[in-house]
Image 1 (cartoon, helix red, strand yellow):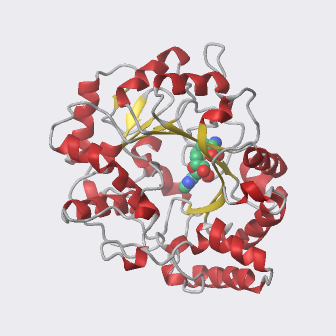
Image 2 (cartoon, helix red, strand yellow):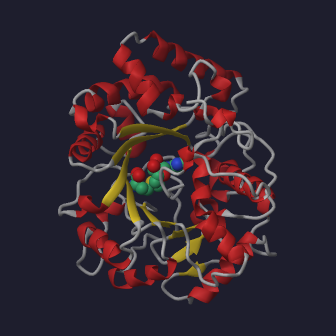
Amino acid sequence: MGKTNSNPLFGEIKYDTKILNHLDTIKGKINGKNHDCRVGVLEFHPTDDCNLECNYCTFKNRDQKNTFPFSGLNMLEKLQPKAVFIAGGGEPTTYMSEGKGFNDLTHRLKEILPQAKLALTTNGQEIPKGDWLQYIDRLRVSIDNSNAEIFNKIKGGDLQKSISSLVHYLNAGVPNVGAGFVFNKYNIGEIYSFTNLMFEEVFNKAGQSVRDKFNLQFRPTCRIESCKCPSPIYKDDSTIMVYDKTSTEWGDTVKKMIDEIGANSNKGFQKFIKNNTNLNQDTSIKHNNSNPLFHYNNHQPLKFDKCYISLARTIVRANGDMYPCVIKASNEINPKSNILKDSAKKIYKDQMNYFNSKEGYCKGTVECCIINGRKNDIVMKVLNAPSFEIPEYSKVDYFF
Ligand SMILES: C[S@@+](CC[C@H](N)C(=O)[O-])C[C@H]1O[C@@H](n2cnc3c(N)ncnc32)[C@H](O)[C@@H]1O
């Protein structure tokens, strides 16, 4: 703990530095050595179909519900990612194309990209049949709630099913298993009850040998009050947002949450908060100004000169369209490449055009979101500090 604070380049940001594992890819493209479209991380959306309807979902307004053709999966070979994050769009475990389901999809991905680590985010409403789990390095069940009634109201599903799936995955030998909680002004007050539920129902009931594989990840729901989000889809969703950390509403709710957590005298619970959640990753939870949970929810000017993310990661949507980030992807913004139709050269060119903020592609800092922009800021700082060594805590995995 505290390592990040001692790092003069970044202050307290920890998760964002994982992009530094892809400096080789970024530098290769900038120097023109790899004239191909290889990326470090592929975020792959196999289907837009979903068995839930989360009222805050980034992709809830998608125009069409597509599914990536099974016979087109070999096209992903062009990207040669070190890590594939299977996500959505919709719910990946409901994938069905040409008579092939999620188990076939996972086997095929491993066949095409044997070197890549696979991660999955799922809502946990269904556990797909088959032996696919052997290929999954990390798995997150998105839960976002601790109350069965509210879960059903805002997501349209069954909380207990998601919890049971989580327990199943934890006991099934997946190396890293997490529960996700995206917070906004409505559910921030539930962080304590959610953490306690996960502690009692999942962590405490899991065998000793698997407990340290489990983590809770708290992330802000887009949109964030003072983030100058350029995304048209969030314009109408200001009701589901994360208030700035300086606002009274936010301060009061956060104080309540911290008091609730502190009032739980169970030593095991406090240890769980410290070791298995990102509530206390960097510093004491009492210092809420520097707590990771609150890093993002106030505006900080972005200073990066280029979009480094566009060289290191790509999102491939269910219809094959490719975007550098979730803002572009969720608004289906042009220009874009398509993995099913375009050559590696064209894809590379588009990546470089986003990188260089070419007219018509992206306006850089003006259009970027805080969450992505901070990663770009970090890469720029590191490239300007050649003697910088990537911190050990960033080397844990390729996903970012
Ligand atoms: C869109 S879901 C698709 C994958 C899968 N159905 C699931 O629930 O994990 C991918 C992730 O995005 C998160 N998410 C949804 N809407 C969001 C928003 N407005 N801001 C931030 N994250 C969001 C979800 O909680 C989930 O962890």
